[in-house]
Structures are given as C-alpha cells and as structure tokens.
Image (cartoon, one colour):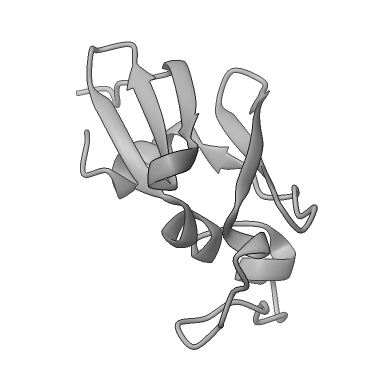
Length: 105
C-alpha cells in the first residue's frame, strides 16, 4: 500500500493560546504548542547533522522570545518554516513530520 501524502490547506497562529493550528486536506485539524514546536526544530543547528550533535536537547531552556511564533511560511509543496521571535527561521517542518507529531497517519 502506498504512503498517502497529506498537505496543509490552511494554518493559523493562535497568539492568546500560544498554539499553531493546521487544517489538513483530509479534514483533520492539529494543534502544536509553540515551545514543543521550537524544541522539535529539525534544522542542522538545533537538531544536529552528521557528527554535529545540535544545540537543542531536553535540558535546553528557551526564553519567551525564542518560543514566540511570529510567522509561518510555506516551503514548496511539502512543508512549513516558522519564524520565531528571536529571528530563527531555518527549520523546515515537513507535512509528514507535523502529521506524525499530531498522531495522524
């Protein structure tokens, strides 16, 4: 059976709840807490790459600025890049990664 690829059809930054909400092409809706999203940043600086371990782990303390979601930009047809309050914007969160984090197929 082929793996089904789902895309986000819309997304919203909910400032007062500090969550990011995504609506999917199959009707599902998922929500992500900002700090958890920042901690899961898949960029090479945060998550590491090759022999580089990355700068974010379970002990990393974030400031409020580092976990404030400012904007979210589409990346091709496969993901999103958040821009955080401290200017960090190099993580590409693939739709597959976001659905997996929400417990969706």
